[in-house]
Structure formats: structure tokens, C-alpha cells
Length: 225
Image (cartoon, rainbow, N blue to C red; front, side, top):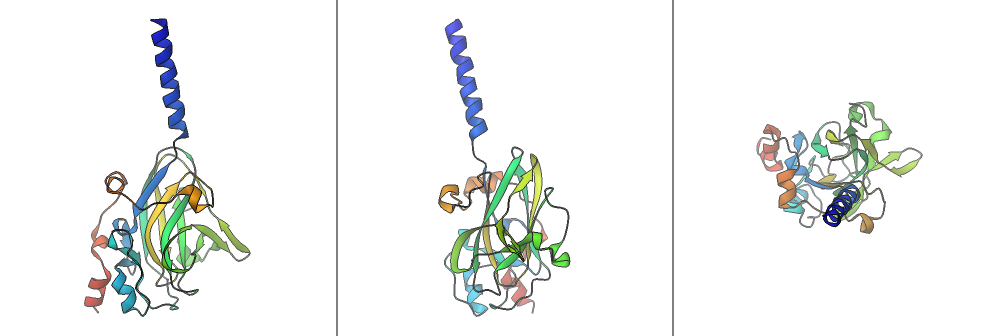
């Protein structure tokens, strides 16, 4: 009996220790978050309509952006907002699957509450929250950074367990966001981190707050003009 009890205690210890070592791995689709106009849901052909090259297929065929031709600037309003349930307190990083045509359509603002204050960087232009998106005409992963006037540094956030609010604000029109990947692996090496697109299981388990804004697509915006 003592031997059996010892085996049970050992097994529980191993399971508990393994649970402590499990990496946090959260993938979320941008088009299923809360979207504030003029940011809307787009599909690849919309990029062609705006004078750019048609991108390869985004995850589940859609992405979010503020429509506009390359090199337009803009970005004074609009955002996509994710409610992220953090399982354990700790330090986290975010990767985005993005597409950016050129140097004038390659940035967002990003805040993550409660680590960041409830600030609108579109109004304050606080470079602490500026994300300089890596350029490229095909979808690629880019770790959210802090693009300061003195250089660009990778960002991480210290967060408590529970619901948090991650907001990606428009800074330049035509910058495209497909999905995000949240992890407690703070490495800058994409191969080591292994960001991935959301699965059906992710869509069932991640916290999504649907609303009327989700019905807004680039097609409906064009039809109303």
C-alpha cells in the first residue's frame, strides 16, 4: 500500500511540475475580434482594388485593415480589440501575421491593458506604443515591437491572470493584420517560438466579444459610398 501511495504522489508531482512548464499558446483571428471603423474586414481582392498586389491567402480568407492605397498615411482612427484570458500571471509577447506594402503603410499602435494604461495613442502619438511592422508583400509573422525615435525594441508585457484587453490601433492605412499569436516564450527567434494561425479549437475557446461592428466589411463600406 505504501508503495502504491508513493507512486501516486510521485505521479501527481510530475503532472503538477509538467503543468508549470507548459507554454502559453493563444492564437486569435483578427476578424473575429471587436472592430471599430474605419478599420474593416477585407479579403485579398480588396488589396487589388486599392492599387496593390493581391496577397496570398490569409488565415480563413480574411484580414482587418483600413482600406487605402499604399503610401497614403492616414490612421487617425479605427482599431481591432481582443479580449484575452491570461491563464497564469507572467510576461507575454505578441506576434502578428501581417502584410505591409511599403514604408508608408507599415505600422500600428498597440496597447495591452492592464500592463499599459487606458491611453489612445492615436491621440497622444506616444511612441511607447508604436509598432513598426516588418515590410513584405506576402503574409509573415512579426513580433510586436516598440518603435522609438532612438531605435526599435521587442516588447513584452507583465500581466496578471484573467481577462485583459489587447488593442491594435490603425496608424497607417493599408497595413494588414490577419491574426495574432500570444506566448510566454519571449524569444525573438520565430523558429523557436513557432507562431501559428488559429485552429477551430482556438475559435471555440478564445474569448471573443461579437458585436455589430463585426458585420462591417470592405464590400459593405464601398457599397455605401
